Image (cartoon, rainbow, N blue to C red; front, side):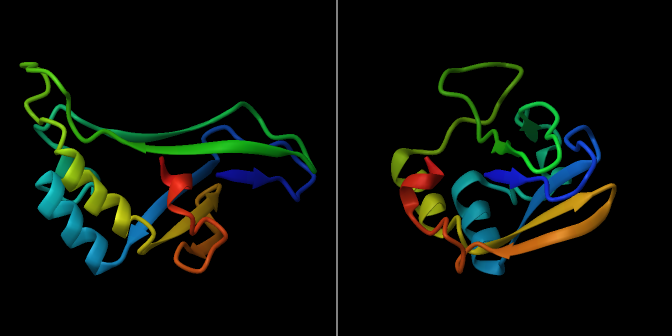
Length: 130
C-alpha cells in the first residue's frame, strides 16, 4: 500500500509499522487453509515460514512511499528447514476471497495513526491482492 507522509519529518525506519487485524472469519479461513492463524506471530513457531514488512526507504515530508506486508505460507518443494507446504491453489483462493475481512492498522513510533477497514477501502478489487 502507499503511505503519504503528511508530517514535517522524514519517516520510514523502524518507527513506521503496519499490521493486519483480521476478523474472525479471516482467522478461521487462515486456520483451515494454512493450518494456523497467519496473523498471530506466535503461530509461526516451528513452521519454518514467517511474515514481515518492508518500506522503500525513508519517506520525506509531503511525499509518498510504498509499504509492503508479506506472509510466507510454505514452500513448493520438500525442504527440511521449512516443513510447511504451500496450500493448493483452491485453498489459496479461499484465503484471497476472505483477505479483506480485516483492518489495516498503521503506527508511528508505537502510536496508532491510522486504521482502515479493508472491506470499505478503495482496495476492494481482488486483483490488488495478487
